[in-house]
Image 1: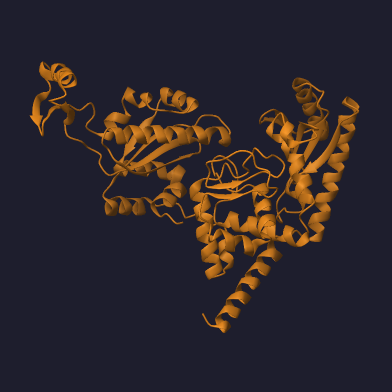
Image 2: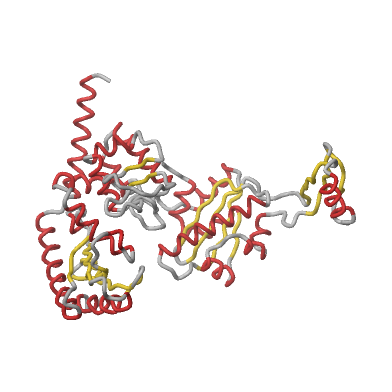
Length: 459
């Protein structure tokens, strides 16, 4: 590349980043409005908390407290800290009382313990109780760490780095890997902030990620005490025994690398724009099915009434169990996925959908006397088996196959022998349907976008 071309690429990258930064940086009016609402809610929460417990205090946490929130984000996270001498039951009781005093129209939700969530003047507000501790290593629940995260980053993020965090978050959103929820399994806000701090900005992070060779291990405070078997390891600066990136799936680390390289090679603003595919039409689905000449099959059932962070681990476990069951019976899963809305679907594409009526079963070599005799005796008087006969020095029998089609297997009780999520298993016991081939079109109304993402995949 000539020096002139390099300068042009440099100018393009800086222009794109500047354009995106203008878009994601909150305007002064937006900052002022959030600050006014947050301060008013903090005062209300503090008054309620100290009335219950004189040693309680209140602080704002999360991206709006760290100046890393993106324009348009409407989240205000208020943590109410109680002294560690308080028992957990009382903390939960006080936490809910403070939450309802702060958010009279709020409702209770549950993570590791209950908290109150509500909306105030267009802002989504969480009021969460936690223990006030000296160190994150003393935590009693995951939320106890959060104040330490805010304290750590507020000491390290200046305005320039905070701006680069916002650009990085938007990039991760655009490529579909932002979010530590158990459906996305991507990059959390805290992880993003740590990565930008560690590498010194958006561009240095992308340049480093483009050359990552997982497993990648980062320890900002050089205090890690535990080994992790994850593709990306970032030791929590506030807790030497925690990997902040533990939830990041290998494919999302790889996707980040792919788009880091693509953006550095050709900087464009569209990398920062989430672009869900158009729902698949029935005609397009039929064309895919005909071209691929595989067999699509799906198990569909009423989605369990769970929050996504509880539902998707169960769906992923069930996906593994069902696809393993199909593979074990010779139906050769080509690719598979799962998705949910009102109903839930475990979807698989099979290279083989129908098997012969008999299956081959090889026994031990004849010269292994005891084992060979046991195998022979087990099948010698079986009227439905072919054999035993000898082939290449070992006993072989051909016995009837339990299921000759994938549909037959999935519609049988043997489906419940595989590893299923507990609530998924209950939902399946209540009833489910199996759709095969062109019958998959019945899923399009609810899952047209998900099927488009499956049949028209991108990095």
